[in-house]
Amino acid sequence: MTADQTPGLAARLAETACVRGAFTLPDGTVLDAYFDEYRLAADPGLLHDVAVAMASLIPTETEVLAGLALGGVPLAVALSAATGLPAAFLRRRAKCYGSKRQVEGIALEGKRVVLVDDVVRSGDQLLAATRVLRIAGAKVTDALCVLERPSRGRQRLAEHRITLNPLLAEADLPVPATEAVS
Image (cartoon, rainbow, N blue to C red; front, side):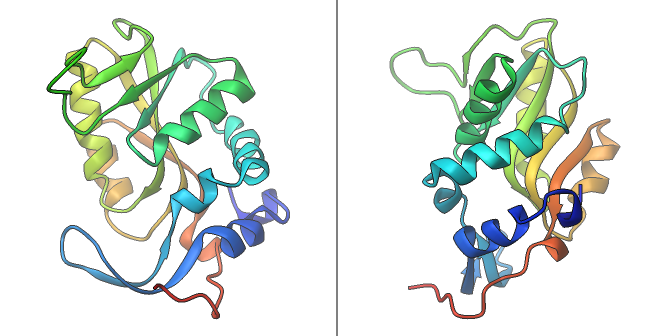
């Protein structure tokens, strides 16, 4: 989907969630701007509108939406509310107390599950989640995200038979020049 297909939404996302400044990724790469998913999740009107726009990206055979911790969880909840599809939630690792589960929510065995995350760059998080879900018996063939950053994420996912369906590409989302990281 492009910014033209989501009138005003790209500008609202840029205004609310794009932050300028040095931001270091886990692999050591330093970005001069980043997408702050917490700012998106904290704005109920924007989160609702993003979920409504993303709903059109969900494949028709989808049975469960799986939100990746932490950025994908509020998106999966909002998408679930907008579509009526049940949700599951993935932690980075299993809890060491309580349920001791890595996946919470609806049972996944044999179900067609779509991954939901905020930003996709390398695809590492989605690939790790896919392994967990496939071991649990889920059929994972698609992933949704708000923003696709230019990197090899899409290609790496395709190598594992996962189609990436982003709401916006980074080029669709201008970064406000006045915002600075504190």
